[in-house]
Amino acid sequence: MRIIKPVLFDSKDADIAENAARAPYFLVFEDDKFIKSIKNPFVSGGWAWFAVAELLNNEWCEKFIAKKLWDNMKSSLDGYNILYEII
Image (cartoon, rainbow, N blue to C red):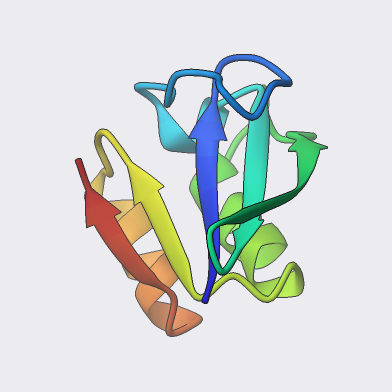
């Protein structure tokens, strides 16, 4: 399963960011193996939740793990059939 996490730093050991759509980086894992990090181009500007959901979809994300998700982000993820888990 391809899992993506929003994080504070470009490190596979970074803490998960509080604001998922505005996280500086996203970490991509495939079957529990670290694949890569992605710098978030939507840290500032409007409609970040929609743009991030599209980015996740383009990265073949199957599950998004976050600390908190606003309803707009949840709806956007649902629109792409991306599962999410709030930890």
